[in-house]
Length: 106
Image (cartoon, rainbow, N blue to C red; front, side, top):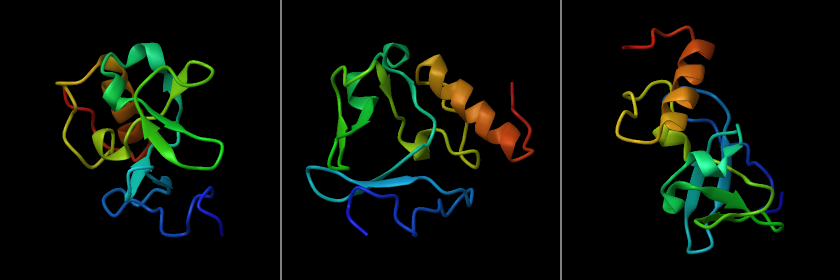
């Protein structure tokens, strides 16, 4: 498989769901949540992730089409509520918790 594909080991060790495991242009890998969100909902450009045509994950900027991806660890259903981040992180986290049948704390 090329680097532009989701790899078989893309399962989150915490929640058990398959994510987009992508190489980062600066080296290493990042696990991205599979749900794209509007880039305008993420105020910190450094938390907006885009996938390039050759499959690499890059952070920042406006990207193409106005959508971006979130780093999965920030919205993983088995992690704490991401209250310190934009509301879109809470929305995706709550959706992931609901998918897993977990209570969404107030």
